[in-house]
Every structure is written in structure tokens, then in C-alpha cells.
Image (cartoon, rainbow, N blue to C red):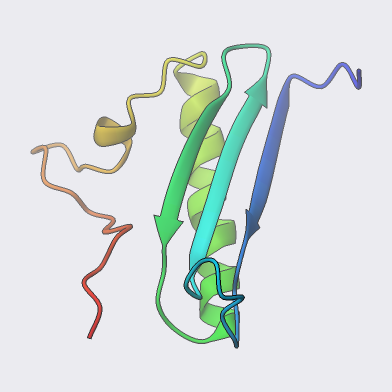
Length: 95
């Protein structure tokens, strides 16, 4: 409809209170446009501001890597460093 090459969508629950359906910090990202749409569910912890900041930062990385991979983004590879070890823990253990 818009003709955009890249669209990043972010939705979720930054808090401070849960909505009864999902915990605070649940965030969904979606990259779409010229190539197949990819989605990523994240679970962040922290204050409302921290969750919003993490959502924006990870969203930018997600969209950039989706674009560079021409929509063939490997989610596991996106979350790992060059040695294959995860550098972003999207589902941290609860306290």
C-alpha cells in the first residue's frame, strides 16, 4: 500500500502493570516490505523506560539484519556473536 521497502512494527507491554494476558516486557517485532515478513517475540525486564529503549534498540538491529539478509534473517544467527554464543537473551529467567 505504501510502497515502502522496509517497515518495522513494534507492539507489546512496557508496563508498569500487566494486562492479565501477558507479562510486562513482552514485545513483538515484525520486519516486512520487499521480502518475506519475519517476527520476533522478546521478553525484556526492567522499568518501562528500559523496556521501551530495549525494544527500540533490538528493533533497529532486527530491521537492519532483516534488510541485509533480504528477508532470510536467521533468528538464531541474529541473536549470536561470531562464535555462535547468544549475545542477546530475549527470554531471561524470572527472579
